[in-house]
Structures are given as C-alpha cells and as structure tokens.
Image 1 (tube, one colour):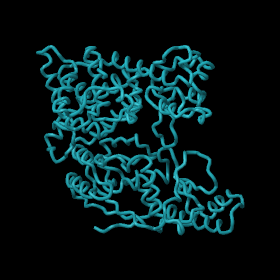
Image 2 (tube, one colour; image 1 turned 30 degrees about the vertical axis):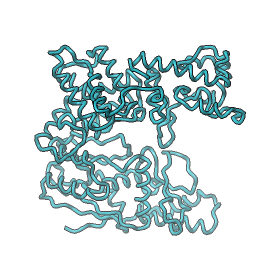
Image 3 (tube, one colour; image 1 turned 120 degrees about the horizontal axis):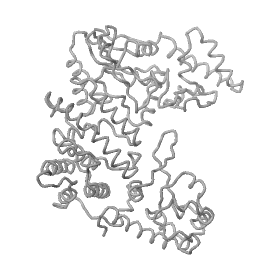
Image 4 (cartoon, one colour; image 1 turned 135 degrees about the vertical axis):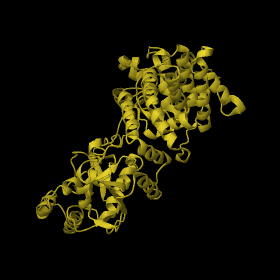
Length: 564
C-alpha cells in the first residue's frame, strides 16, 4: 500500500463525508487554548510555505466500528456523539487514526469557527521577509476587520471560477490606499492562498490507508505506536482507548457527566481527572498506568463508573457549589486533595446507601475542615491521596458496626502528622498566601459568588477590590508603609464589576460616604459608619488589623480550625 497525496481542499471535502473519527480517538488535544492557536498558526504557515505537515493514517474498513463526526464549530467543551450503531457498517467509512489535530484545525478554520473565532491572514504580511507565522491571526466571529485581514472561511467558500471576481472585491476594500509594492504583495498573497485552499493541484498532505483485514485490537495497537511521536499519547489516553474497545461510549459518557457538572456549577473537571479517581478506586492509587490494567480490570472501570457518576455530580453540586458557591476550577489550586472527598461520597453511596442529604452535620463540618486545611497546608501528594482512600474506605465499611460514618478528618490529619509529613496547624500568615488568594477569599465569604472579567482569551480574573486602594489618587503623597499594609488578604473583598468601575482608586472613606448602599457588599468591616476615623487613609493599618481579627474569628468559628 502506498502513500496517497491529497490537496487541502480534497481532504476537507472528505471530512464527515467519508472520513470520520473512530470512537477510540482521544479528543482534540493541542494544549491550552492559546497554545492551540499558536499550533494552528504554525500549521497554516507551514502549508503556505509548502512545507510537509506529516502523513495521515486512515483505516478503510467495512467492519462495524463505532465512530463520530469531526466538530464543525470547534469548542474544547464539545464532543460529537458517537454515531448510531446502525451506521457502523457503512462500507464507505474511513477512520482517521493519525492526523485528527491537523484535520480538525483545517476543517474548523477553513469552513466554520474555532472557539467562536475566525482565522484570518494579513494580506500585507510578507512571508519572504518574515519567517515567523505572524501572518495568521484569530478574530472574534463577525468582528469588523481592517481590509488587510482576509477571512479564510470566506476564501474557502469560493468556487474555483470566482478567482478574478474575489481578487477584485478584496483589493477594492483597500480604497486605493495601497502603495504599488503593497498592492503587488496583496495580489501575490491572494494567489498563494487561492492555489492552496481553493484549487486542488497542490497536494501537500498525504495519507496511508491501512489494510482492511486488520481487527480492531491490531488497529488500536497501531494507534498507540504511531502516537509515540508528535503529540504523544498520555497514559490516560492509552487507557481510555483500551477501555473504549470494550465499551465504545465509555469516554463519551464521562465527558457528558463532566458537561453536566459544568452546566450546573460552571466548574470544569476533565475526563482524565475522573479516570484518575476510577484508577484509585480499582487499583489503589491515582497514578494511571495502563500496563497495570488487564481485560478484567477494564470491565471493572465500566462497572465502577456507573456507580461513581451520581456521587461525583453530587460532590460538585451539593458540596462545592451549594456550600461554597465555587463556580470556577481555578479557585481551587490543588485538585488532588478533592479526591478523598469525592471517594467519601462514592463509598457512602455505594457501601452505605447514603446521599448528601443523609450526611450528619458533624460529617459535613469535618469535610469543610479537611477541604480548607488540605488546600492551605498543601496536602497534595499522591501518597496522601492513596492512603486517605484506604482510611476512608475502611471507616465506611466498618461504620455500621461502630455507628460512625462521619468523614474521618482526625484520622486523615493523624496520618499527615505522623513523621511530620506536612504541617497541620494554620497560622495567620497561611491566610495571606498569594498563591491561594482566590481560594482563601472564597472560603472566608462562601455565600458570595465570584464575578469574572473575561477577555477574548477567557483568562481567569474574578472582580476583587482593594478596600484601601493599591494605587490611590495622588499616590506620591502616601508614605511607603501604606503600600505595605494594603496588598494583603485582610484588605481584599470580592465585588461586582460596577463597584470597581465606580470606586476606582478612591479611599474607602470618600467612596462609602458617597455610596453607602455598597457597604452591604463588604464583609468583616470594623463598623458600618465610614465617617469614623478608622476609615481614613491615615488609619489604614488599624482598619486592616481590625478586619484581620474579624476574619480569623470567623474562620475559627465557621470551620472549627485552630489558628495559632
């Protein structure tokens, strides 16, 4: 069997017509969103420069193999559902085992959208002078663009006989404001793009068709081998592909549950994180290793997932969201300490038949105490999670006879204390850990849901106010000691955007005297009268110390934790 050359347009025309994704394929994975965009720039720039971009591996088979479509408008939180079983025998299907990232990028960027953005090319970019991939850039969907930026989906949608008309319309957008050399560059770039993405003569891709008489296990083995280079398969992806050979929609079911959690709480948990929990429940540790999993174990993963799904959703909705209003995964810096809480939900449901509404107030108090301390004292070692799982399982199994099913916080703390593995006592300085700032503010004011400012890259940025401003008006008139006082957790408050937009850099006394209705949005204040002297800039330190004492008093009472 020989490699078969193919143009970009021919490849795109095959997608979701004869080329599909097998169920065992991992979801599109080119790193974080900004990295995905960087890789896409490189991919398109390589094509434009006529560089090779690797060979696709396609399995041409008439066997009943589960498969799904490529996404049209790409979104990292979406996954196309697996086709109905009645379509698996389609004799014309070709399954893509290597090349998903490239094909999905080309397909979405040339025909649809990518994270609700469109890929454009700067027609005034000179690739002969600049060897970087700076000619390509993403813009928001339907955004008004300068004439120099050409939408690639607009170009791709043209018929081959429209070239002259398209070139004329594109150049006319510049309103004769180009210099002669710029006009020549635009025409050259347009011709290059047209030949590459509209015509079919330039065949920069190639694909290798696998033999039709292979069985699925052999193809899965090929899939793992060819992914040892490039974007190498993770251990979780290998294990998912093996389990999906037994139950084709295993990962899809987990993905759907993660989506339910995101819809209900805005908290994003990945299927990989769920797989780690399953691995812990089945194999005793969270370090996923597909070499330790046999056929019997894979059936156990399927069985245990059916039992884990409901308590998993309950943990995020009933505990994290209802108790703390946590609505973003980045509020919590350490994800591993959450796993013992999740397995407690699992064991309570499946060993004792208890739902969250059946948990005792003492158990919920212990869970909150563990939640706070495990994050603030960095109880995030794999060995902690593995041993916490054993302790919790034993406590729940023995709970009926000992009449105690409460979350075993003391036992977990004693394990940590033994041999001085980690500190277990909080100090005031722990609350001022800049790395944990969003988390600490959340547990101190659990009833207040965070509001976010989202830029086009959706960076995590909750609205936070420095009560005494970090950069006050007439900043040069303030003593140096003022700036040491105010950039601290004791001076921070999550707020709504309109407060920051109104308050700006005003002193709290000036602001709250003029806007007293905003006082109710702030917690742990020394008093409710901003006209008193403790609210003035000269008494900032007294204000902040008083607020610190109020915060520590709340933490001791609310979570029953010792602060020394």
